[in-house]
Image (cartoon, rainbow, N blue to C red; front, side, top):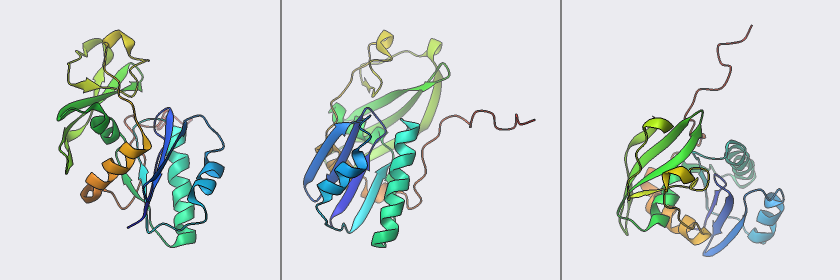
Length: 191
């Protein structure tokens, strides 16, 4: 099965298709044109998209793009948690992925990683920054912003994207929606 996979949850846009990979600066606003050129007119058999947590605009734009392409190609995009990419990139068999959830909070999620599968151990949790204690088995896509905690970072690549999604096949969601960790700002506050 030739699956087009895209994740734009971090500072790197990752695209994988049929053994080919592409990594772009996450702020590259020409990513859709670059995707068109990358696909070389080919039509995939399946679509998968990273759901975050991470860049709100990047995740939503990617879901919308794959939904539009899915209409043209008669395919339904499926989603996966982007945090799993960081778990695989860490190289650790048991790892907690930590990210900046803003609003003085961090998000965490635990994974067990084997060559065959990636298992999420529990849901995403929000932790107050002032109560957070880092551990050696933690990795973060936001290590730079969270430098005071000394968290490990990992290098993402489009090939990690492809292998991660293959191991998550049994966990892909059929209704991709961004992973939101906070309620929308202003909900219930309308005058």
